[in-house]
Amino acid sequence: MKYGYARVSTMGQLQHGTSLEGQTKMLKEAGAEKIFKDAYTGAKRNRPQFEKLLNELEEGDTLIVTKLDRFARSSLEGIKMIKDFFEKGITVNILNLGVIENTPNGRLIFNVFMAFAEFERDMIIERTQEGKAIAKQNEDFREGRPKRYSQKQIEHALKLKENHSYRQVEELTGISKSTLARAKKRENY
Image (cartoon, helix red, strand yellow):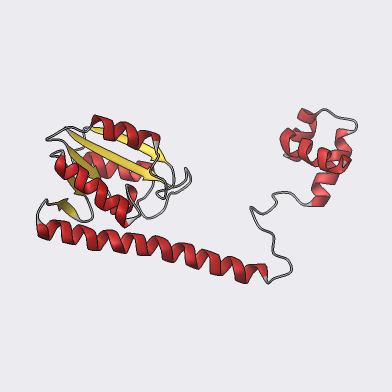
């Protein structure tokens, strides 16, 4: 049987053909009969759907993934998985590389590409940390998601709350009950 595996790091990842929908389409076009999907970081191997897939794979099956980094980002992990697949008689087809052959040349090519995937991941982490360090030098730096509402908007909504229900305030301002409740709790401290 031909199995497909699709993974995104977050549910919102939608660029460069890495969305779950984009990967699923590519896997179906490549002949995948059953597709497993996860929304977990590739840095972690404990992914529920991936674990289910590993338990279903049998000798003679084919595993199809769109890109190498969809199932492994560490060289050691990727090499171990490919070795395990070869020992079980499972074919691995990485769509942007092709079928990984259980030959000295095939294993060498896979190992080189796996090293590049790990290098790419490490470089992303390094650039992110450098960017964050530079951003922290700015006195206006605030880590995390930017605030959706200004302090003035929150104060206005809390003032309305004195004479209106949460639902009414939400209808008037667009600020959710949970946001108002958190603001009210912070204000009372």
